[in-house]
Amino acid sequence: MAKKKNENKRKRLKSLVLLLLLTVLLLSTSTYAWFTSNKSVSIAPIDVHIAAASGLQISSDATVWKTMLTTNDITTGYSGHKNMLSAELTPVSTTGALDSGYLKFFKGEVKGYSTLDGALALTATATPAEAAPTTERPNGEFVSFDIFLKVDEGQDIYLERGSGVTNQTSKTPKYLEYAARYAFVIEGSTTATDTVANMQSLVAASTKTNADMIIEPNYDAHTDTAVTNAATYYQQTITAATSGQNPVDYVGVKAAITDPIILKNTNPGCTGTGCGTVSSTYFEAVPSANLKKTNVAYSDPTNSNYSYYGKGATDYDLVKVFTLPAGVTKVRVYMWIEGQDLDCENNASGAYLTFNLGLALRRDDNG
Image (spheres, rainbow, N blue to C red):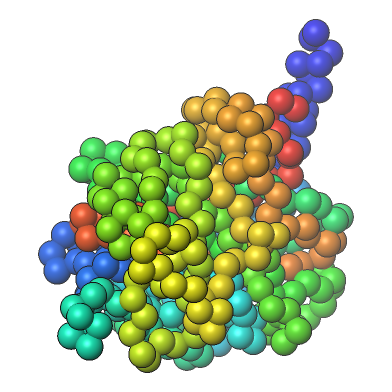
């Protein structure tokens, strides 16, 4: 027994943890979500901390390698970086599709149209390209930034226990965390002896079509308002609960929508009267291989019931997000509120959210 405990301790000591803490403050004035006019919501300065144990090195510029990065490291970046810590945040949608190595996002607007008998319908426009280097994106709708990871040998990387999105302690719950997402895009890898310029210029090949992994935290929780909206707009039955529910399928926006589409025809779960076929021209599901859904307990490092969809509530398995080869890998991290999520609704505005991301080399907490 003592030998096994020692082995488990050694494994834990070898576990490499990358912790990213992002605190987002959504002000309660003039904030609207997907179901209305999508006015912008302001966010506070972003607080980012990235830490790692021995064996994994992190850098924001592929020059200075550390065991911890701060917000200043992310905003400083490197010459020509495209890190975007938005001054405004609005719900957006993506299928995970890439354009020159960057996620394609679309900003939707829902309102009633007289031409559709007053029915609520969705239009969408592409968000500005991630082109101009900037440390603050006044018209941005999401957060994105580059990090560089260095390992001495190839390693599978897993989403650490405690990763997820939660409401800030002491703040009134709004449950917008039920609609949050984050994603990883591996821009490329090279040897540790390559030039810094080559490391910084890594961008995913044009043949790469999707993000390497999208994480949907809190898939098993829904609000009362989301239940009502699901029934009203999609004729879809879901159950309100803080945890333990089945996931609700959604499709992301894949192209600009100029002619309004009635909400019932934007969700694959709608099967009742008035529901039509969801257009494959404008909507598409995130490929299952690129999407993992973690439960509410996964966001809580003290909860023993953490899991992800497809695993038992106490299975203890961690989500594998990607594999790092030996050398240096450039990874772009994204964080956003998914407008197509049923829990992205008006009553969720005014939320105070915390994003926690941790990457580890160990597979589970059982050693």
